[in-house]
Length: 291
Ligand SMILES: O=C(O)CCC(=O)C(=O)O
Image 1 (cartoon, rainbow, N blue to C red):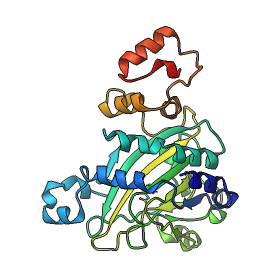
Image 2: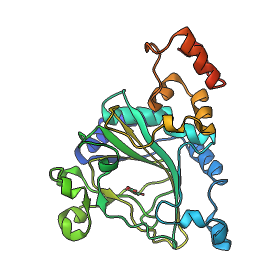
Image 3: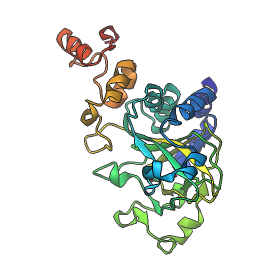
Image 4: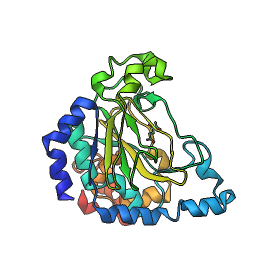
């Protein structure tokens, strides 16, 4: 774990991100966390064999490109805390150049070969994360690989910002290769083993690609972090405030992790003896002395 922190602080990965707008961080998260997440996800997602044997039991997982997406919270504490993991947050802070960040969205996703066509066109993520056109490092998307991502299991394809050109409102999606032959020609596949972390700006061209391995399975945790601004968002965590998974995750989180969800940080004027007592009643397990 410490290695990954040192490595992301290492200038080579940061420079690569700053130049290209994306980077694949190897071994970002310790293997046990990946193994535990995979094990926990067995109760959510069928194996390829299970899906093959009884597809009618799991119609949702192959219902379009996002059928296999389960948005946060998924009501499993370790899975719900994973996007708030300390190493991941440190990496996000290093790349964003700020410690004042918010989690904008998180979700687990599975893709199965031989089912849906997962091919996408090159696009930016910012149009559905921001009401304005953000600066390059305002919003950063991530995929934590929970399975090996090879060329055959739908790697994300990305294009260096060095060939992006200016951000133009009519070029947030390149609907065909004719819209940017030189940009499509510059695509690179983000291939890496389980435990790798792909980071990419919301202003960096990228796309999902087809699963060509007939029985391939790609399992990821996708999420994004952004600098807090009223014009920036995706999921609304207050909207999810009655979800058991959110209540459980808030109670178990550190003040730092809660702040990533939008909670007032320690020292905020919101905190008074009365508000601390009220919040502790709302979230069983919440320790007021943390504030
Ligand atoms: O799944 C991927 O590799 C990329 C997905 C993506 O870019 C999207 O859904 O907007």
